[in-house]
Length: 129
Image (cartoon, rainbow, N blue to C red; front, side, top):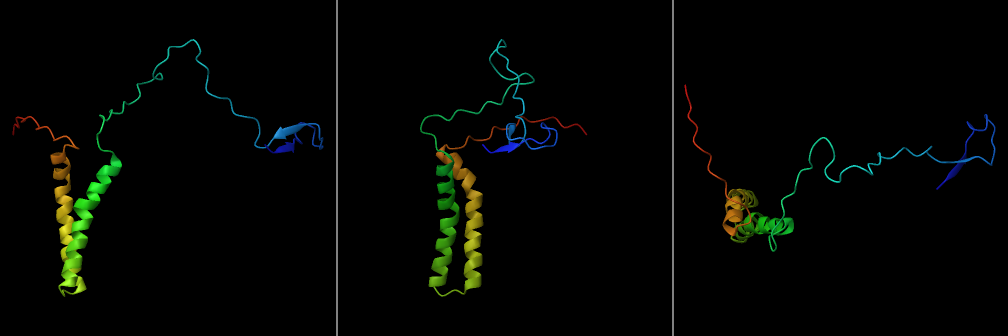
């Protein structure tokens, strides 16, 4: 902690016997509710995070699956088309098309693996004209 002299306390002069912590006095902390009930803060309950079941995939696993389903097939298609002699422009566009198709299939892959719940069907509404 850096200590400085406080010219305001000493009447404008500099006195070495009145050190002050740099940055001024500490701000008061939150009030202490020693006698209050333990639980969520007043004004509303905290949001509850869903608990992942044991062995469920994490964000890293989903990211790796996305890499394998979306990016790898596009790069493989591009590389094969270039190796076959197709120019860089058409090969790049076809590789990009494969990536876009992979983006479309990725949610269904997650559902088939059971990593994401299926959407519930919406109940039919009566629309009156």
